[in-house]
Length: 432
Image 1 (cartoon, rainbow, N blue to C red):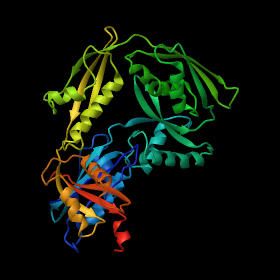
Image 2: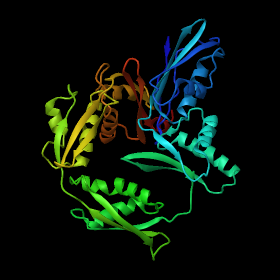
Image 3: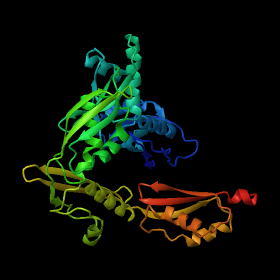
Image 4: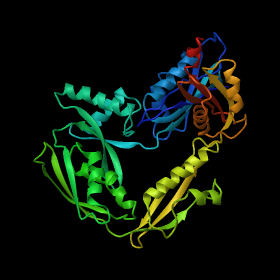
């Protein structure tokens, strides 16, 4: 049986994707594909995913066909990671693809097309086999949905550009709304009144910096306030802050709208029960050092997020490269308490395997290896390569060093990490 190394993907932001690499005998003949199976898929059926791969049961395949199939899946933008294995089955191959879907998929709603939504779903399903009515907040799949509907919209005589936006759907939930962009006024400036313990000018500065030029609608304004104004209050414990009534009217100094926002900050909330995982992956002394939250103190939500980040970073320094900490909040408005249920995922603990060096001659490379402090089998600290290269530059180890970089190659099956250090400029200066 053979394993691939994983694809790394992202839907809302770009991440480099490396080709899988499997040891296959040179000149290996193609064999029939007997089965395609998927592990880890929740939002998408195996049948839909198999259609995306382009592979057909019974047709002859080689490793390059598996690589291409994984690339097609990656291009949908709905997976955080992808890897595969293949093994003999009835004189051919069984292909198993292990997927990790993006953590957040939003229901897709069509708006402004004047068409039966079922018709649009059928259209997208025909052109995008993986479409099942949900999509990430951005990335390749959203672009494919927009492009497919844009072509259809033009065929119907529509002239507007088709756009997709994440908008509130009520009850704290959001949806991806896709439709032709209508003429609308943009926000030119927002003013706040009755801001309480947050300085009005500071609130306006931060809010307007983020939202100036955004298309105005009541739902969009509520969303912008939730993400760009509310955090200034929840950092002070005002968990029940309310914005609006709001008004909007033409701004005499621009072509946009001047928005007036009334604020009711409410009462301060305190931390209630903070439920940590049992068992905890870090010791109590370390937790005391990194935690910025505690029962009975002001419920500072920024401090809660910062604590989760510090826990995750600390675990990554101890080899848990995929560690992350999150929490669910339970707000008791009657007692004005915020209870937290903390979740910590460590994943595999990775260890250092070997050091590779590029850009140095046979005399300089051993000197670098001698200074490198991590030994084979040591827990891998994700910050060490950058720290090491900073020390090389700070100590002026090489006079003509122009720049440095580093990368890692991860063996997921064995939990091992190879580090490559790249030194640029030295060989060019020496004429090598």
